[in-house]
Amino acid sequence: MRGLPGPPAPASPVAGANGPSSATGAASDGRTGGGERLPPRERLLRRADYLRCYRTGRRRQGALVILYFSPNGLDCCRIGITASRKVGNSVVRHRLKRRIKEIYRRWPGRGALGSIDVVAHLKAEAGGAGFGDMERDLLVLLGGLRGRRGGPERGSAPGNRGDGAGRQRADGAA
Image (cartoon, rainbow, N blue to C red; front, top):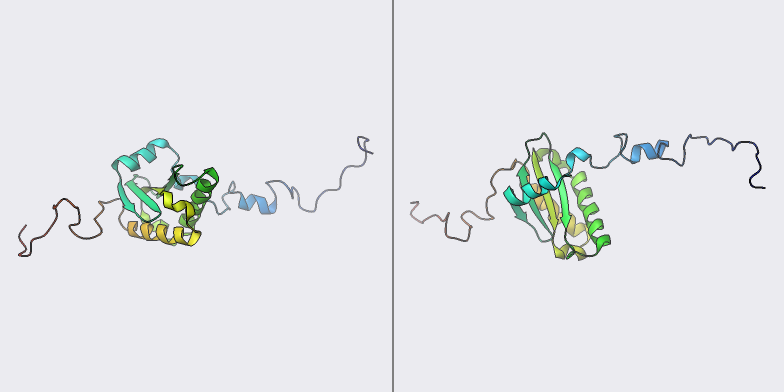
């Protein structure tokens, strides 16, 4: 019967097998540093950092994602992800954010980015895209940032500013 005092429950062979301090949980939840999650020092956490990237940073545009990037003066690259309601409902937006974070976390070239902040803004078209499409688009954009170190962005083609500036004359004169 319930409620009657009885012998204590037998101890589990693994202490805390169901709790977060178990042998499997401690390594996978990221609290002990043994997990695979993106560490907080590599994520943008403050609104001011996002605004700085939007206002003073450079931009690269893909089919599904727009990357804004700006130098941060730290010793590592940080990433932030934004999505408007045009992308989809909250379930879709959060799924896409998790996908971008995972693509970035697995990317072997993230250490070569240097000290920049990157904001990945999802376009409305990203809502119906698959993981492979998102991965291809994001890796192309991130690969273009490697070695930039937050420097000025060049257009897709030399002299392609749209206002006539930067064009070279055929005779080589400026």
